[in-house]
Image 1 (spheres, helix red, strand yellow):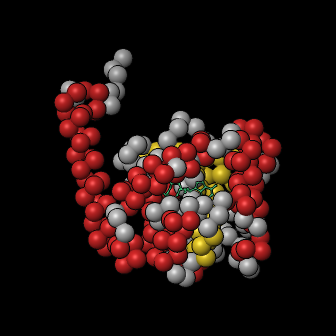
Image 2 (image 1 turned 60 degrees about the horizontal axis):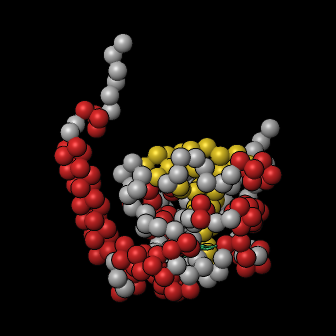
Length: 231
Ligand SMILES: C[S@@+](CC[C@H](N)C(=O)[O-])C[C@H]1O[C@@H](n2cnc3c(N)ncnc32)[C@H](O)[C@@H]1O
């Protein structure tokens, strides 16, 4: 039997390290270009990777880790239909996914951004003045804060693996509770499986499907689509 080897496994360690280093260099160049071309309010502050690092140092558990790269931003927003209705974004942080949503055609006024870090929330409001920005924890949002908006999708950058189960359950139930019945929640993770536990999925009657594996992110990540299970 002939084994099919991943091309990376047939290369020497130097080549693999070299490949990784050039991927990181490309990523830095893309981020620098994005910072130069981003909304003027975003350009006033430090580049997003540096800002992300500062917020991570300020609160590692809440910020979660790395600022996501463009490949992950594209993957997590790939199934969003801009015509379907407002989009709820949880934990937008430096606005990486927010910009990808706008690039996909979602109108700024259709964005509801829920960010617990007041400094990042103020920055998002300045950069996306037409969006509804709620500077609070995702689990504490109530329906009246959304006015007459009924989100058709949720994109989450929350580091769910750092949260206790009861907080994850509260966030997922609250967010999907605001949405149209066929809405999906898109969540990324660096872990090997969906970051919402099977127990929570069963209790809330949800199902999850992986929609993408993003090797070009640092670190590599997966995207899950979480919806109400139909039987
Ligand atoms: C890893 S950052 C993600 C930012 C961006 N989406 C990305 O992928 O680069 C997570 C963000 O979630 C925010 N956050 C953490 N817990 C939250 C909560 N309970 N409700 C709303 N935002 C929260 C943090 O302040 C941080 O900005």
